[in-house]
Image (cartoon, rainbow, N blue to C red; front, side):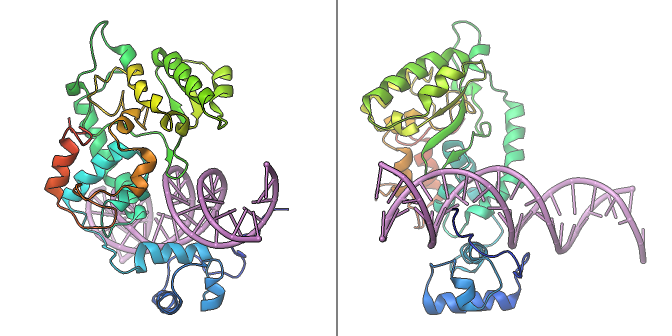
Length: 288
DNA sequence: AACTCGGACAACCGCTCCGAC
DNA sequence: AGTCGGAGCGGTTGTCCGAGT
């Protein structure tokens, strides 16, 4: 069985694209439009994989692409959005007109992640189980940049291997299980829970199980957030249920459109108003 | 001038989702 | 309901280039 490979690897050009190849690709897409990437190389006469053509077009040749010179405003926005969304580069790129996910990802890996790390070392974060008894994780103790998030698939809306602090495991597990039981969809979570309850608990559960139900909002009670902050502690639970309680659902971000909001998926926006939005009660309180 | 090293970024790869059948 | 192919995503790798020695 097995599917047809996206392209035959033999006899194809690899590596950096030449100006000639770019021109062929642009001419073809201008004439025939995007799509049918698998067949495009053959139709256009390019010795490239279809996926490679798609990547080249989307990241470099498409009209309206900005290259380089990422401004301070953009960097700040990327950091904030990364704090909110984790490594969901395509969603982040969608909030930065003219920027591509690949460029933002590279910029993050080479520049911003270090910046954030530096900021973190200035304001170290305590895990909830490291806090003094009776103390709360105050906003001042949370870093503005936050730790790297676990990987979250953009489309799947699913947390894979979310690491939860031990004291929260049972509460989240019980809640997720009860939510799951009230839904008809299957979840890998239950079996995971049965098989793995170490202190470095790795939960594979379908975030939809938590999100589709109105009960999801009650999950706030599982986390010592005080209704203030997205992250319980940042690396532990990347996709906050709190977001959803505030009406910004993870899946909704992809289709998120609201004329009252300072930025839109593909539109222009004002950085200052966006910063205000992110800091506001209606936003995410991502700032320190 | 030659070499090494590290940063930046372009491209590739494997996985997943989703729609069509 | 199950399978398949198209498409998209994020992580990783490869390559280039400039700075330093």
